[in-house]
Image 1 (cartoon, rainbow, N blue to C red):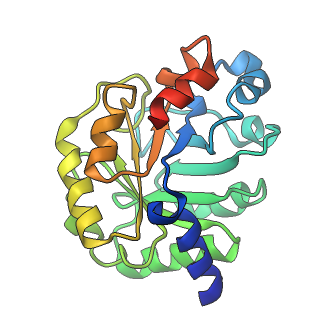
Image 2 (image 1 turned 60 degrees about the vertical axis):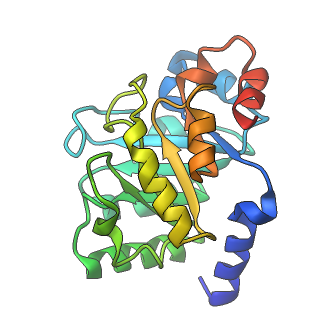
Length: 228
Protein backbone atom coordinates (compact mmCIF):
# COMPACT_ATOMS: atom_id res chain seq x y z
CA UNK A 1 0.00 0.00 0.00
CA UNK A 2 1.53 3.34 -1.02
CA UNK A 3 1.81 6.42 1.16
CA UNK A 4 -1.17 8.14 -0.45
CA UNK A 5 -3.37 5.16 0.34
CA UNK A 6 -2.21 5.13 3.94
CA UNK A 7 -3.00 8.82 4.32
CA UNK A 8 -6.45 8.24 2.87
CA UNK A 9 -7.14 5.44 5.33
CA UNK A 10 -6.10 7.63 8.25
CA UNK A 11 -8.52 10.34 7.17
CA UNK A 12 -11.39 7.88 6.93
CA UNK A 13 -10.69 6.33 10.30
CA UNK A 14 -9.71 9.23 12.49
CA UNK A 15 -12.58 10.38 14.73
CA UNK A 16 -11.85 14.05 14.06
CA UNK A 17 -13.12 13.43 10.54
CA UNK A 18 -15.84 10.85 11.05
CA UNK A 19 -17.11 12.57 14.23
CA UNK A 20 -18.83 9.40 15.35
CA UNK A 21 -18.02 6.04 16.83
CA UNK A 22 -17.77 2.91 14.71
CA UNK A 23 -19.89 -0.02 15.92
CA UNK A 24 -18.46 -3.44 15.16
CA UNK A 25 -20.71 -6.39 16.10
CA UNK A 26 -18.88 -9.63 16.85
CA UNK A 27 -20.51 -12.68 15.27
CA UNK A 28 -19.08 -14.80 18.07
CA UNK A 29 -22.33 -14.00 19.87
CA UNK A 30 -24.55 -14.66 16.85
CA UNK A 31 -26.75 -17.69 16.20
CA UNK A 32 -24.65 -19.74 13.81
CA UNK A 33 -27.68 -21.78 12.84
CA UNK A 34 -29.06 -18.65 11.18
CA UNK A 35 -25.87 -16.72 10.56
CA UNK A 36 -26.87 -14.91 7.39
CA UNK A 37 -30.12 -13.74 9.03
CA UNK A 38 -28.10 -12.54 12.02
CA UNK A 39 -25.75 -10.56 9.80
CA UNK A 40 -28.69 -9.13 7.88
CA UNK A 41 -30.13 -7.85 11.17
CA UNK A 42 -27.17 -5.54 11.89
CA UNK A 43 -26.92 -3.56 8.65
CA UNK A 44 -26.88 -0.28 10.59
CA UNK A 45 -23.47 -1.20 12.06
CA UNK A 46 -20.15 -0.21 10.47
CA UNK A 47 -17.84 -3.22 10.60
CA UNK A 48 -18.39 -6.94 11.20
CA UNK A 49 -15.96 -8.51 13.67
CA UNK A 50 -14.66 -12.01 12.95
CA UNK A 51 -13.08 -13.63 16.02
CA UNK A 52 -10.72 -16.28 14.69
CA UNK A 53 -9.44 -18.64 17.42
CA UNK A 54 -7.12 -21.60 16.99
CA UNK A 55 -7.51 -23.32 20.38
CA UNK A 56 -3.82 -22.68 21.11
CA UNK A 57 -3.28 -18.94 21.44
CA UNK A 58 -6.58 -18.87 23.29
CA UNK A 59 -8.27 -21.85 25.01
CA UNK A 60 -11.13 -21.93 22.55
CA UNK A 61 -11.72 -22.86 18.93
CA UNK A 62 -14.09 -20.60 17.02
CA UNK A 63 -15.77 -20.89 13.65
CA UNK A 64 -13.72 -21.96 10.66
CA UNK A 65 -13.02 -20.07 7.46
CA UNK A 66 -15.68 -21.98 5.46
CA UNK A 67 -18.35 -20.53 7.77
CA UNK A 68 -17.46 -16.87 7.28
CA UNK A 69 -16.57 -17.43 3.64
CA UNK A 70 -20.26 -17.72 2.84
CA UNK A 71 -21.37 -14.51 4.59
CA UNK A 72 -22.89 -11.89 2.33
CA UNK A 73 -22.73 -8.35 3.70
CA UNK A 74 -21.85 -4.79 2.82
CA UNK A 75 -20.33 -4.30 6.27
CA UNK A 76 -16.55 -4.02 6.38
CA UNK A 77 -15.02 -7.28 7.57
CA UNK A 78 -12.78 -6.87 10.60
CA UNK A 79 -10.71 -10.02 11.07
CA UNK A 80 -9.27 -10.53 14.56
CA UNK A 81 -6.65 -13.27 14.50
CA UNK A 82 -6.36 -14.82 17.97
CA UNK A 83 -3.94 -17.44 16.68
CA UNK A 84 -0.32 -18.43 17.18
CA UNK A 85 0.64 -18.10 13.51
CA UNK A 86 -1.32 -15.17 12.06
CA UNK A 87 0.86 -15.00 8.95
CA UNK A 88 -0.61 -18.34 7.89
CA UNK A 89 -4.15 -16.88 7.87
CA UNK A 90 -3.61 -13.63 5.98
CA UNK A 91 -4.16 -14.98 2.48
CA UNK A 92 -7.29 -16.85 3.54
CA UNK A 93 -9.03 -13.87 5.09
CA UNK A 94 -7.79 -11.51 2.42
CA UNK A 95 -9.65 -13.71 -0.07
CA UNK A 96 -12.97 -12.61 1.47
CA UNK A 97 -11.86 -8.98 1.24
CA UNK A 98 -11.21 -8.29 4.91
CA UNK A 99 -11.13 -4.53 5.38
CA UNK A 100 -8.93 -4.81 8.46
CA UNK A 101 -6.80 -7.67 9.81
CA UNK A 102 -5.54 -7.57 13.40
CA UNK A 103 -2.93 -9.82 14.98
CA UNK A 104 -1.89 -10.10 18.63
CA UNK A 105 1.26 -8.56 20.02
CA UNK A 106 1.65 -11.62 22.25
CA UNK A 107 1.62 -13.98 19.25
CA UNK A 108 4.23 -12.05 17.24
CA UNK A 109 6.85 -10.53 19.49
CA UNK A 110 9.88 -9.95 17.28
CA UNK A 111 9.97 -6.53 15.61
CA UNK A 112 11.07 -7.76 12.21
CA UNK A 113 8.31 -10.37 12.14
CA UNK A 114 5.72 -7.78 13.18
CA UNK A 115 6.73 -5.38 10.42
CA UNK A 116 6.74 -8.18 7.86
CA UNK A 117 3.24 -9.15 8.94
CA UNK A 118 2.01 -5.55 8.76
CA UNK A 119 3.42 -5.29 5.23
CA UNK A 120 1.84 -8.60 4.25
CA UNK A 121 -1.55 -7.41 5.49
CA UNK A 122 -1.27 -4.10 3.66
CA UNK A 123 -0.33 -5.85 0.42
CA UNK A 124 -3.82 -7.37 0.47
CA UNK A 125 -5.26 -3.82 0.55
CA UNK A 126 -6.44 -4.34 4.14
CA UNK A 127 -5.49 -2.10 7.02
CA UNK A 128 -3.35 -3.59 9.78
CA UNK A 129 -4.13 -3.70 13.49
CA UNK A 130 -2.29 -5.00 16.52
CA UNK A 131 -4.09 -6.25 19.64
CA UNK A 132 -3.12 -6.19 23.30
CA UNK A 133 -4.43 -8.54 25.97
CA UNK A 134 -5.50 -6.87 29.25
CA UNK A 135 -2.29 -7.81 31.01
CA UNK A 136 0.03 -6.66 28.21
CA UNK A 137 1.49 -3.15 28.68
CA UNK A 138 1.51 -0.55 25.92
CA UNK A 139 5.29 -0.67 25.92
CA UNK A 140 5.02 -4.09 24.28
CA UNK A 141 4.10 -2.41 20.98
CA UNK A 142 6.42 0.59 21.12
CA UNK A 143 8.29 -0.82 18.13
CA UNK A 144 5.33 -0.81 15.72
CA UNK A 145 2.55 1.35 17.17
CA UNK A 146 3.52 4.09 14.73
CA UNK A 147 3.23 1.68 11.80
CA UNK A 148 -0.24 0.19 12.33
CA UNK A 149 -3.60 1.63 11.37
CA UNK A 150 -5.35 0.50 14.55
CA UNK A 151 -4.67 -0.76 18.06
CA UNK A 152 -7.19 -3.16 19.58
CA UNK A 153 -7.28 -2.98 23.37
CA UNK A 154 -8.83 -6.12 24.83
CA UNK A 155 -11.05 -5.38 27.82
CA UNK A 156 -11.48 -9.08 28.63
CA UNK A 157 -9.09 -11.98 28.37
CA UNK A 158 -9.57 -13.28 24.83
CA UNK A 159 -11.14 -16.61 24.05
CA UNK A 160 -14.77 -16.45 25.14
CA UNK A 161 -17.69 -14.07 24.67
CA UNK A 162 -19.85 -12.70 27.47
CA UNK A 163 -17.06 -11.84 29.90
CA UNK A 164 -17.10 -8.93 32.35
CA UNK A 165 -15.53 -5.65 31.26
CA UNK A 166 -12.15 -4.86 32.85
CA UNK A 167 -12.08 -1.09 33.54
CA UNK A 168 -8.36 -1.09 34.28
CA UNK A 169 -7.62 -1.18 30.54
CA UNK A 170 -9.09 2.30 30.11
CA UNK A 171 -5.81 3.84 31.20
CA UNK A 172 -4.17 2.24 28.17
CA UNK A 173 -6.69 3.86 25.88
CA UNK A 174 -6.18 7.27 27.50
CA UNK A 175 -2.42 6.97 27.10
CA UNK A 176 -2.73 5.80 23.49
CA UNK A 177 -5.07 8.64 22.59
CA UNK A 178 -2.79 11.19 24.21
CA UNK A 179 0.29 9.92 22.40
CA UNK A 180 -1.37 9.11 19.08
CA UNK A 181 -4.36 11.42 18.50
CA UNK A 182 -4.82 10.22 14.92
CA UNK A 183 -4.78 6.51 15.72
CA UNK A 184 -7.91 4.36 15.53
CA UNK A 185 -8.42 2.66 18.89
CA UNK A 186 -10.73 -0.33 19.06
CA UNK A 187 -11.93 -1.93 22.28
CA UNK A 188 -13.31 -5.44 22.58
CA UNK A 189 -14.84 -7.20 25.57
CA UNK A 190 -17.86 -6.57 27.76
CA UNK A 191 -19.01 -3.57 25.76
CA UNK A 192 -22.61 -2.55 26.43
CA UNK A 193 -24.57 0.64 27.11
CA UNK A 194 -22.91 0.99 30.53
CA UNK A 195 -19.30 0.40 29.49
CA UNK A 196 -19.39 2.00 26.03
CA UNK A 197 -19.47 5.58 27.43
CA UNK A 198 -16.43 4.78 29.58
CA UNK A 199 -14.53 3.51 26.54
CA UNK A 200 -15.52 6.52 24.44
CA UNK A 201 -14.56 8.97 27.19
CA UNK A 202 -11.15 7.32 27.41
CA UNK A 203 -10.61 7.80 23.68
CA UNK A 204 -11.80 4.65 21.91
CA UNK A 205 -13.53 5.20 18.57
CA UNK A 206 -14.34 1.64 17.48
CA UNK A 207 -16.50 -0.51 19.76
CA UNK A 208 -16.70 -4.28 19.34
CA UNK A 209 -19.88 -5.64 20.93
CA UNK A 210 -21.32 -9.14 20.90
CA UNK A 211 -23.99 -9.96 23.46
CA UNK A 212 -25.14 -6.35 23.75
CA UNK A 213 -26.23 -6.49 20.11
CA UNK A 214 -27.10 -10.11 19.35
CA UNK A 215 -29.07 -10.66 22.56
CA UNK A 216 -31.29 -7.69 21.72
CA UNK A 217 -34.60 -8.18 19.92
CA UNK A 218 -34.13 -4.86 18.13
CA UNK A 219 -30.56 -4.91 16.84
CA UNK A 220 -30.81 -1.48 15.17
CA UNK A 221 -31.87 0.05 18.49
CA UNK A 222 -29.01 -1.73 20.28
CA UNK A 223 -26.50 -0.38 17.79
CA UNK A 224 -27.93 3.14 18.08
CA UNK A 225 -27.74 2.96 21.87
CA UNK A 226 -24.04 2.11 21.71
CA UNK A 227 -23.36 5.04 19.40
CA UNK A 228 -24.83 7.45 21.93
